[in-house]
Length: 251
Ligand code: URA
Image 1 (cartoon, rainbow, N blue to C red):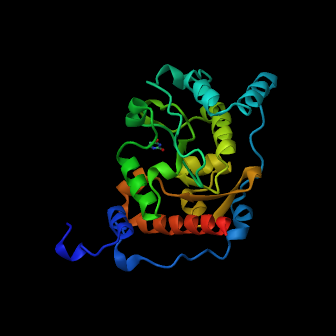
Image 2: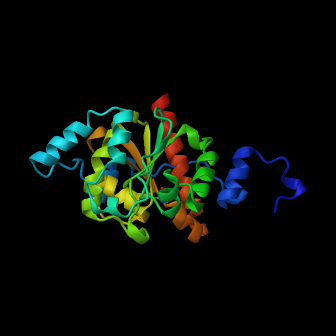
């Protein structure tokens, strides 16, 4: 409850409160000592997915040349995997095309499938609060997903769906050239880093996104944080690490 004593709270503190993080839990960011060895430790490979054959290779090459409008239109017509049969619409991504931060989640849910925008449901509200705790409005970052179509009943994305969708996300990353990728949730982190390491081991350190070298920080998915609010403290540590990475990239 917002009592009279809270009137002096800063905007950031209000959003930290929204995230459920108590004031006495705030700390200076502490970089794990093993940041540089992250990839060795997790066994994350540096290579990106290679095309599956000549047609696939041709398609990937074409997608890699599209500008924003052509890419959006290509995605909206995509029938590369089965998910096109059950979607209401594709969910391309939203935000600042010159963003420092690129947030990548898993896949559209029911709300996103209905509205055509990522992270608009309850998890999206928490994501917005997490970003605001970092001093970022939703419009300042770019938000996308591993998949552009909703898997039925919100099941996990299948490898062939991820592979079909990956060229679109790769092109978005190339167009944005973010200073940081924030992977939210196990599915995003494992697919981006091409590993099956648990999210609890991937978070809390800085990875590099394949051969782009873009720093990548993984954290818990906001939907998971809604179910497990005690983990919000660790998510806040991850966000502080992400802020530090972007600050350092700018200096
Ligand atoms: N969860 C995700 O990972 N992405 C969305 O867009 C919505 C919920």
